Image (tube, rainbow, N blue to C red):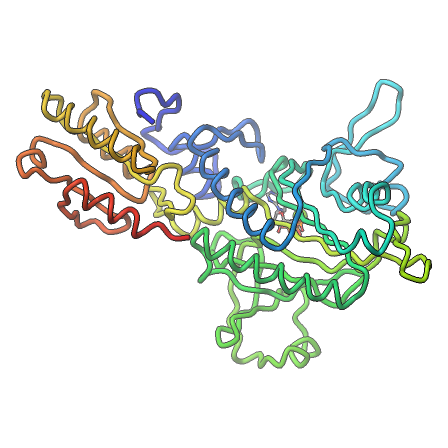
Length: 420
Ligand code: ATP
Ligand code: MG
């Protein structure tokens, strides 16, 4: 992509009306646009990051046998009355909208009701189970506070997977698989070491649910971390009882703030019972289906990566999610430099490398400032200086010392650092 064609521009100054680092930097760099408090649009660079994250999640969901689908965001009030969750007391973040005929519909906060309801039309025999379905879908929540940038949106993209099992054992086995899949996702997007499996409230149907909490000052949750076991307990369930059960010693726990980037939740028959989702077993008897739900906020995760990796002033993207791998800067406009840079651009593209090519007639200072703000993994400079040595000046962020490489050496290096 030629930067002269990119319709978003960076701003010299960060916006003054954001409380979070993620929204401040992402807006300054033109990755996102603020529509209203807690409501953000994703611009080309931001969408590329979000798409990369989405693709990693999709691969891991497919790997555990998930089937992708797409439910509607408009939801039928009658359905939610069956589980007693239509009222604003039951769900305090509802957005509802009136139809012309005087009835109301809900804007999806979750699909825990529509999914099992839908399944009653498509699965009935023990042969139809177990099954796991997932989607990347817009959720709406009338959140009280929206100070965490894209980590707490009033409209946001969620990956939600729902599992349907015949027995508790079948459910438990799948739950373990999801736990591993989530660990792989957070490792692949570059925050594996900061993210901890955390015991949290299980609601009315099981003792615990589990969250994936990323240590960060920007987090809104408090967790107690056992570094030896690499697990944590959310303060909402911390008690002597729970510590004993998990074989943890309070003195060895570290209190820290963290971002809930994902969660997995055993639901038992909480929704399948009232919605009548059953299967007939081999003896022709009706049995209740056991459910689990598994969420990841895609924007929340992108915001968390930003919080962890970016400096106060500049973004920094892990290669796996970066909008482009290489930021190619042309410094100078002599015929030689222009021709050389174009060759590098074409050759990298030909080798399957994604490149943002700063082909603008701007000053070196401007180009460097933008390049630092964008924080792409590789910065490659072609200038009179490098031309003279016949080499490219390559900086692999967050390193600041450049290496001087032949084009072929750069391509080899890029192939080597591509993880996964
Ligand atoms: P929180 O306690 O942070 O409000 P939650 O318990 O309401 O989260 P779930 O309803 O389980 O979260 O949603 C699943 C996932 O969706 C969360 O783990 C989080 O990653 C993400 N998520 C939740 N609310 C938001 C939001 N307002 N904006 C962006 N992502 C969100
Ligand atoms: Mg919430």
